[in-house]
Length: 509
Ligand SMILES: *[C@@H]1O[C@H](CO)[C@@H](O)[C@H](O)[C@H]1NC(C)=O
Ligand SMILES: *[C@@H]1O[C@H](CO)[C@@H](O)[C@H](O)[C@H]1NC(C)=O
Image 1 (cartoon, helix red, strand yellow):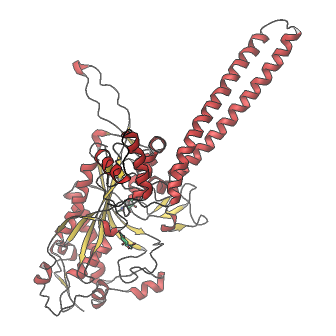
Image 2 (image 1 turned 90 degrees about the vertical axis):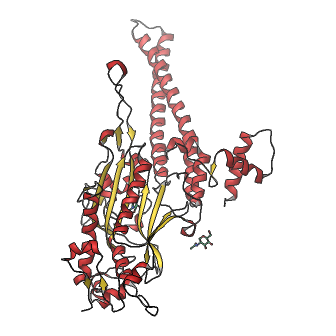
Image 3 (image 1 turned 180 degrees about the horizontal axis):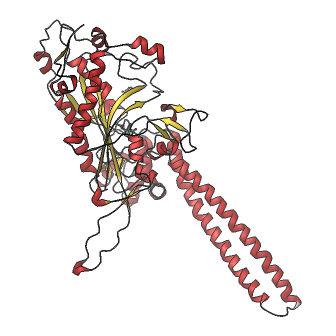
């Protein structure tokens, strides 16, 4: 276990509250707290969602989650600022209400005096006073109200930079080296045996395999578009398309997803709904406002189909009986890849543009964990059908994405690079995105007893789940590396042959 000293101090203070007469060394305190409310060295989320109220009332819990995420000092400060502003806000509300009361009293006096036919000099003076104090109270209330609105905007802006709370299942850790391997599937020696690899055979990297097949045109792509763009041709290009078709067909016919075809250009508020903005603008390809805007907003190329697909239901109220909604969408994705300078510069692993088949579920709070497991298993089914060995890892607190509360990565075995690489990331965001896009559902109402009218249920926030099923470019990488033969040809996995005109092998031309 690992905890930062601030967490220990904070937890210790919680302990002191809980075990007041007991004065213990910090070590003991943490151990005691661990039996009551700690998971992975942070305070359990329980049923809390990330919203202003939680940050104000449960600041310790929120801070322990931010520390678990290895959040920046700025983010921690933002949460503390929100809590401080909330108490300022309640003072302002009191101030405004007291001004409103003053105004009411003064207006009553004015009204009372105005109804008189004749006013004494004393009463005349009283009336002037009351009018003055009514105006003053009114101005005071307006000023407080304006101040309140500003405060609310500041708090909302701060909130948009705070990541989701973590599920209890998320292990603590600094980075991907602390992710938890949940399971592994397949035997990494099975395909090599089947394909006749000898002891001496050194499997090639995917780009060298593709070049050998004359299907990899990286110089041409770089000439056209610059670094991190790739062009494919012939059977290799066809194989990429076959993969996408196979995935979409599998999810629509076997897994019950509805296929959607969505815009590749989206406005700022769609990206705010799924929380890529405001925090991750440098990861996006922006379109200049002179060339195009979306309903007057800044326009961007989509980083994942999840953005347009989830936003299709923005600000809607769905019926619980219609949930879960399950969508599959095949799109290109565009990433600026800021911050990955020098990493994976070779081949198809990290490109500015790649194809992905994306799965999205919109569900109720009660079924979200179950649907997350299901969606992950449906992404796994793609790898199993292709007989590609992989492992499933649970991302640790320092590696998990901003919006996710629980996330599995599927990592496929790459025989050339001799390592596991991420090929799918399946996240449950709980109600984090739904809150940002005001996406709710009406719970099923229990039919009242004795034929009484069912009572109207309060609306609840939906839960959103997304995952790649799968990233097409990386699956192509895995096929080229795992299905290569020592003579340079590549065997077409059986399930893809119908999409390749029956071709069983891509031979060296
Ligand atoms: C990942 O975290 C471990 C400690 O948990 C550390 O030793 C390692 O340097 C970190 N790796 C990177 C790339 O930061
Ligand atoms: C799932 O959604 C998150 C937040 O929008 C996004 O960062 C991530 O890329 C999405 N995952 C996939 C596989 O598209």
